[in-house]
Length: 297
Image (cartoon, rainbow, N blue to C red; front, side):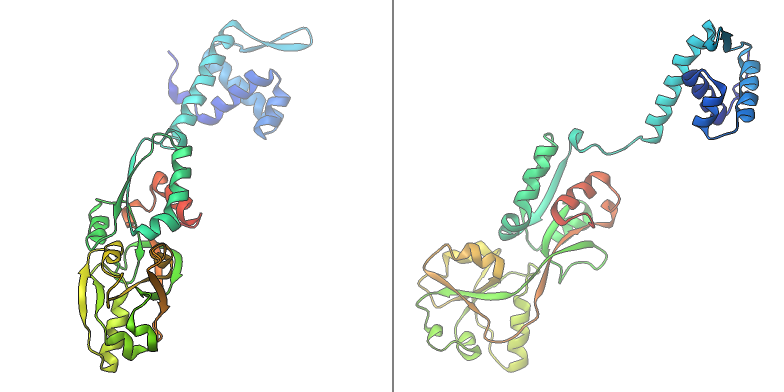
């Protein structure tokens, strides 16, 4: 019995080329070797298989009966090797997986709805679990209980991977007949109660910092878990709410409310797509990130 140690991958590739071309010179060109090197390979192969493999019939070379049987097996070997090398290659169309995403409602409309709809068209078996962003979202990302978070990265773990989606400005939302509008200033803003978000990593902290630095009292009349809970309290009240410019586009569908710029300057804040380092090289995760944030994610 012949030993596999008498073969190597290059010799098998030469065998496949000889079977395909049935000509030593053309097989040599295909393998980018000299004709003498291919002739030497053919001699080795004849010794290994104890068969001529290629014989001259008239003006051409033909495969021997044993070579005909070997040809199919060699092709199968290289097909299997290709599958082995490409094992785990990501094919979006066959993706069958659940992705969990935490995001504010405004971020869902602005950054996620379109890309996630496209993802489901490409991968019909893809399942999505969408959760409202809250104070536990970054903990969930850290522990692997969510896959992606769309939020300000101001309070995010610096070790999280991220991709900038937008730079946002904080604005005020209040009743269109609010008394502060008669003379819109920092004095009038801080003389009325505010709606605060419970510590969810949003940027009302900038407003608090300005108040502390300039001696204004911080008067929180209502604290809510998310932006949309504010809507029940703002109309026909003296409360002032805060949200991003993007979120304000949704809030202002209520014609009883108006948007006002902050009467003082604070830094813009970043809205980012964030994920854990553990998923950085996950092909399916990367594919979804790229749909949402572009190919650098």
